[in-house]
Amino acid sequence: MKVIDHIKNSKGETQFTFEILPPVKGYHINSIFDNVDPLMEFNPPFIDVTYHREEYMFNEKENGLLEKKIVRKRPGTVGICAALQNKYNVDAVPHILCGGFSREVTENFLIDLDFLGIDNVVALRGDAIKSETYFTPHNDGHKYASELVNQITNLNKGVYLEDLEVATKTNFCIGVAGYPEKHMEAPSMKSDLHFLKEKIKLGADYIITQMFFDNKKYFEFVDLCKKKGINVPIIPGLKPISTLKQLNLIPHRFHCDLPEPLIKEIIKCKDNSQVRQVGIEWCIEQSKELKSKNVPFLHYYSMGRSSNIKKVAEAIF
Image (tube, rainbow, N blue to C red; front, side, top):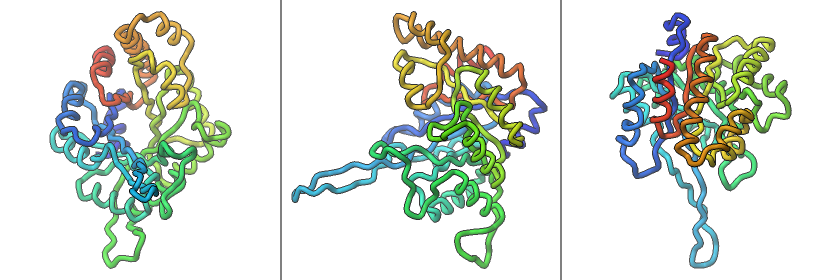
């Protein structure tokens, strides 16, 4: 079932969803199930599965030259989605990136998903790889998420990259990212909203936000979207802080501010177990307020660990 249909069927009741990332290459699928199992009691209608793009390694050859090698450290998004749907009878929502994909590889990826009965995707540009300062697209790939959305929409219309005698239409529901504190590369919030609206015009069905820790930022973002004529569902993304290191890592990596009261509580903590409890309690309060405003879903970023997400969900659902 499509994400937008899950929203319609919920009859205004806020539902629980979460996101997982593929394990590092070499791990068994059970490492995924071990983290998903404890969260299934909260009846998520769908589970997002991230996609991690390639990295580059440089090996020195005998002649002193460097050989560039492509490495994928977290493969398996499509396989994980199929496994989740088979084991839990839940909709899986794979993320698909511009980075590292040619348009042909993108088309084949989408065809695979369609054959597996997966009819939801989240279309993202993706970040620059570690060796790059700025994002660089594949030579025959997409530079912007809007271009990726357009390709998916075209496939939904039966428009492939080449003329085919039989061109079956796909039926993907398309999610895109939204940034309550604006994308790090956007010159302004106004500019960011302009390009977000372009993605909606090109066929995106809903928005899922980057994590935030101040609900005011989410509510202001929703209001700005409405004023801009963006009227699709906007799903809030949440993450409980779990370590002292994340006090600096999260703002650096995800470009979001932490509220002063949260910072002060974390600084008081003597160890990470106390930080984890503060993070859970803060996320519970965020979730309660958001649920009281009838958001369609509360979407949690698990980052491969589910125990703190479970604590939050137990208090809310």
